Length: 298
Length: 318
Image 1: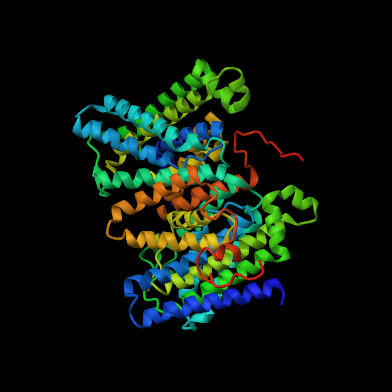
Image 2 (image 1 turned 90 degrees about the horizontal axis):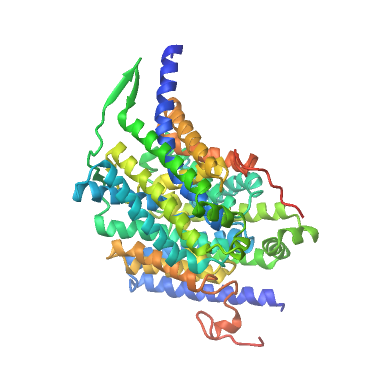
């Protein structure tokens, strides 16, 4: 491989990685927000992403909506689903040991997957082409209009989320609850409501990711959420769990590294690379790239 | 006779009775091939559940990567019997040693983590193991390791299951086992009392991994095939569910959990689409209403045995 083709391959994978990473980042945000507040690894989050993709599919294929209404429909549906799940499955376990909640989350994840399989069959579906695919070429580098769309929508949603968290009352309450739940409650914050909101926001972002993936790959299936769900968790840990900019950075880094691994090594090693990163991060900087080191003191 | 020896004898006696009963029923074909398969599957799952319980229940280290060690056992034993032509017993030993060795290598660095982080790290490691197997043409890669002889039969499965339960029970009841439980209850306090927490956590992880390898060896030699898709994190969650259903920190609980799940799956075999849904709902409902599992961290003791299953005849002294 001479240097110019290496360079173009590198840039190409960088572009693929950024669009993949934006997806991870969107899902990771939901993980990180829920973890920040409840200290719960919400294993069902990947399945919310899948639900979102199906809601988008329903809006686009059955209701014949165009791109933007479909996206909003999916986000709304997933937000609702997230809130319902929190209310029914997680709220009764607020005071339970964390492992109990983790196992419940696994249960919820299976429940969503297989209920959907029951209703829509396990076969993959073709996602309607609601966003035109155009291919741009620059010096041998291929950029797809859908990749640009993914990046733009993700960026917009992240900006929106940052605005909500930093500049609105709900966001302030979310930060307060995540900092210290009991004190926040003493200050008159309605903790249950804030947690509901957190789930709604996180789920909406995951649903957006689901719709974008549906458009990009043209195909969705009921088990599509498993791997990306876990990968997004890796992204959240990579950036520092509980930290919102961390989830964004972690998602992008993971996406780029994965794309590089499948471009330069072999696509089958992609998953192994992601998990190796996870383990290295956990061993050497468990608080994540953007996290502060907190040593447990005796 | 001291209490431990007496309990051991009771256990051997009960094991022998159950074994002979089931074996006779199988030989006379009262238990047909379908249930025979499920009984062997239950034995394998008991091995996996009890060994995971040693890590998760007794030592309090939350691992969800058991499928990875199971895969190592399945593949190493298959290499031994298929490629090297060695007898099954050697293959089983090799599976145990390989999985335990890997458990040790993985355990030393990762057991520094705790709680959720350890859970996700073990999950990641088992996926790494799987991806590595997937990319090794020597063991069949993505199409799986085929042509494994059908060497697992009921006596093997039951015998190894019994051995596993017996050994793990004795580990838990030994001074080492007490150390493990101390680490679970409070790592810091245990260290203050002179227990080398890191050493004991690694010990539990290594032994647990070894037995998972054993389960894997039985598994691949029963189904003629070792396929990477059999060892995904779904498998780890399966085993975890058995342990949690029975009760973390209860060996008899894990046995019951494994048996219940195998037979529930078998009973629902005609409704595959409902199986996983019921399974998931059970898990959620159980966590909300009885998070400690069926038995909590208690064992089926002689006192409870008077009311429950096997060996109800013996109600002495206690």
